[in-house]
Length: 153
Image 1: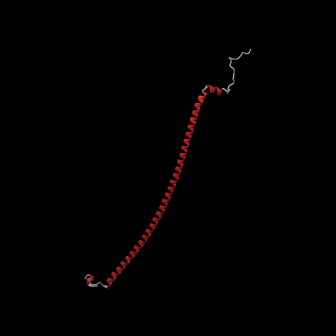
Image 2: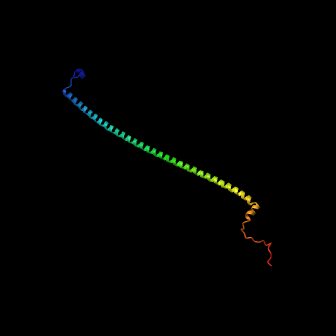
Image 3: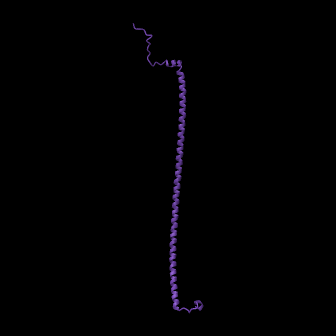
């Protein structure tokens, strides 16, 4: 070394230089060991990140499958409810049709009975029809009137 390189001091002895080189060698060895540990830690972290990504993908796939299954169930339930509602609406419509038919039928029979009642009261109130119609029926035995009877002598 020159004086300018050493800062103006006397050159170092070989033994001092060897000690410095040994210290530097130990420092380099320690740095290499630290770098190796850091690389090992990085590899472990990389493996953990890869495992976490795989777990995340699997969780996402499972979640998507569950969501799809739930959506399928909801769709089936919706279709079933629509079918049931349609069937219920059809039943209600048929019931209303039957009710309307019964109302019409009862109205028809009511009007028929009213008309027949009017005709019968008109006919049966007539003395001529009454005698002609009811005169042929003998529901009670005929007895002669006591006013026209002859005494038994």
